[in-house]
Each structure stands twice: as C-alpha cells, then as structure tokens.
Length: 416
Image (tube, one colour):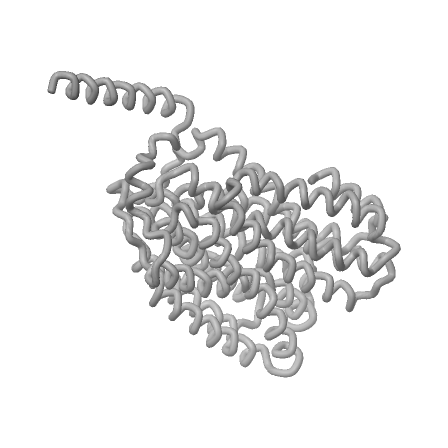
C-alpha cells in the first residue's frame, strides 16, 4: 500500500511539474487532453447532422459573399450609376468586414450561451437583409441593409457554423471542417449562376426575393441541425484576448491574413489579367468560376488528409503548393497560353481554398473545444482588415488602372 501511494504521489508530482512547465511556454497546453478525447463523439448521426447544418449556414453566408461582386456590377449600371466604382465597393467591403470583425464578440457569446439564441437572432437579421434589399433604391439603403444589417447578422451565423464543429469533433475535425466548408465553396459557384440570369431577365425586387427564399431554406436547415454540446468555460460573454498570448496562434493569424489578402487580390486581378493578355472579358468570368471549382476541392481534400499527416504540416504543404503553381505555371506561361492559365487558376483556387478549412483545424488544435469560437473569432477579426481595407482598394487601383501583366504577376509573387 505504501509503495502504491508513493507511486501515485510520484506520478501526481510529475504531472503537475509537466503541466506547469508547458503552460509557461504555451497557453494552449492547459487543455486536459485526456478529458477532451473522451468527450468528443467524433462521428455518429447527430454529429454529422451538425456538419450538414453548418454546411447550409456557410452556403448562405460565405457562399453568398463570393457573389457580391455581381451586386456591385449591377448597381454601377443601374441604381447607383452616378456613383464611382470605388464608392460602391465599400458596400460589400463593409458587409464582409463586419461579418468577420464582429466574430471576436459573437464567438464569446457563443462560448457562453451556446448556439440556439445567437443562431436564431442571426437568422432573422440575415433573412431580413434580402427582403429589405428588394426595396432599396439608393446608396444609403444598400449600405444599411447589406453592409450593416447583413454584416451583423452573418457574423452570428458564421460563428455558429464554425463553432459547433469543435463541439462534436476532435480527431476527425479536419474532415468535418472540410465538409462543412464545402458549403461555402458550392455557394460561391451556385449564387453567381442564379444571380446572373435573375439580374438580367427579371426585376431587382424579384431577384432579391428569390435569393431570400433560397437563404430561408438554408437557415431552416441550420437551425434544425446545429447544436452546441460543451459547457461554457466562463460566466461572461466579454471578449477575451488571451489567445493572442499564444505565439503559435499569432503566427497562424498572420498567415491567415496573408492568404486571405492573396485571395482578394487574385479575385480582382485575374479578370483584368485575362483581358490585358487578350483572352477577353468572357474568359475572365470562366477563370473565376474555375478558381471557385478548384477551391471546392481544396476545402475538402487537404482537410481530409490533415487529420493523418498533421494540420500544420498540411497547411505548410499547401502554402508551398500555391507558391509553386505561381512560380512554375503562371509566371512563365500565363501570358502565352489560356490553357495554362486555366490550369493555374484551378490550382490557385485549390491552394488558397484549402486554408479556409485547414485554419479551423489548426485553431482547434490550440484551444479547448468550448473556447474555439473565441479563438477563431479573434483570428477572423484580424483577417477582416484585409477585406475591409484591401477589397475596395483592389477595385479602385487594379480595376481602373492598367498595369503591365508581368509587373502584376511579379507583385503578387513577391507578396506570396
């Protein structure tokens, strides 16, 4: 008995010493990994229904955000024809900026109170956005409805769609995140295909009401299937910035900012690049579609393998992959071969799209599941700066001025 007691005390002392040492070097090491593993279903009907609900929420939010450029084009030719392109660009920029920047607060609310109420209020606000947009005719109305109301409500929906995955999955979180993020990629393909003929052949009011009905179906599925299950770690919903004390998280956030900025510049640059190379404006539209298709595969396949080879390892691999596609395909062949350009934008979409889902898995590796929404919200709030600032600048300077094609490619390569 004395031997057993001594052995237990020795093991306890070793555990305390190890925990103290690691917690001083990395705040995320305070996680009780044994308890974490035991409390995650990592599968089963209920867990996969949560992924399905998250899929529909991301389809309606991130997927729609990928098509707001069509709104900008329509406004510039119709309701806001007397406004400059750079001024109009601020409307979708505010929309995307608020949807990400406010995640640091909505994440804290989610971790404290769970998914139900924040999801309900976000759904009501987001649905109202489309039916109010149908009645808008001036700049202020579009800014308030889409920019402000749409941004506020989508922040709540995005937080829930990302946060609930961390409540149900740990070992298979990469797979689950990739499948959920597939919704945003498919939305990025589907919404433009629906919007383009609607805006050309029917009225603005009818187009917005049609979008509202599509979004309604997605929100109903999200509210039915998305459920949180972990207990709150705090009695307060106040923003907590302790995650910024983790150096690994800080580097991950910086890389997320860089990848998103690269994606924004690419979306604005590729159509102009194609036109200047003599491929025509129609080619620019299909190049963006090809890039979104590549992003669809990129959000699923790397995430699937990340659970086996390591999430940070896969993230680094995809960064090298994206850089290599620019260096060995775009720069030497982009000006001379449209086929090579199509191959490049597919690979480019695959690489940049992978980061969206991989970053969720990496953040989840650094924190407890019931703190995940705060951490991912903190990262998104930094990423939002890229959308809020560089999106309108991208339209202003890349779309209104002509640059030499090689100079544009070189600048983008230098940034990467």
